[in-house]
Length: 400
Image 1: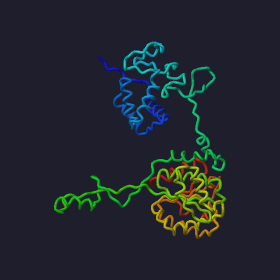
Image 2: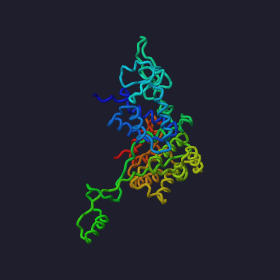
Image 3: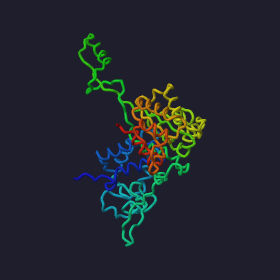
Image 4: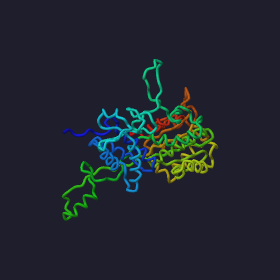
């Protein structure tokens, strides 16, 4: 006797897991991405042979707290209660209104749905087709999904000064989603590891205590990897009015991924790290604007960098990726800026300068400040649009 076929054989299990997790989240049941991955992996290892097996696979994979079980049961029942799809493909043509078999191996599609799973609003979320548009004029069945991008994706090449406040508010999450895995650096601390090559003295002495302080076993280890620091220094003067808010959202996106330090300057330097780490974006933007009392004033880049280098925050630059966002218009002497940038370059792992005017055709760094700072910059990027900002994330998170 052959084993019964797996349920939902024609359904993509990844789409099933994502859609079911979305319905659970809509019902206030937290489902992590690791839980969704566990469901997909478990389905691949041991495909469920019936509705009961499918129920338990979803339950043990997606539910983590006992108080969420009633909600999960209600969502699962709402998804499958009104369906009519037997394992036998011939049963797809059966009358949905007919009596349902008592076999546990029956998984039913919502009434009113066609054989492809589309049709009614109550269709299974993983089987319901997306909105489609017809292409071609021959009256055939050539149909493609209609992809509707988000507002910020559609405005990816729009300069920041032309974006409305609603789209700028979405920039932070847009950047956080685009930010890849953060690079790491070797620290001076060691952890024991079988494949390590460095002798860990403290662990070796601890093991020697068990052998009368005779060194019988040598403990070896590897260096502990830590996230590479990030320091963002943003120009909030009058010439940067159209881009300062966008760069503030870049600071917040970086602070959500790593322990980034943020500074703003116009005529003087102001630390903005406590403000950008607030949970509320609106409160963070408001308090950051209030902290910069010289906002939209003059520009003194060299003075601000010297203030950072001579403060107790100077150690933050050591081994860090330093991002300086400014158009390079400086009222200080170019020689002073060159001196400050040279020291920043010696301390930092990499120096990235963001200049929104660099996107202009035929741009040349001819202003005194920009020309003096350029030899000490590893990268010069425009960062004038959301798409260009994603390129900034790629550069500052590079492992080189």
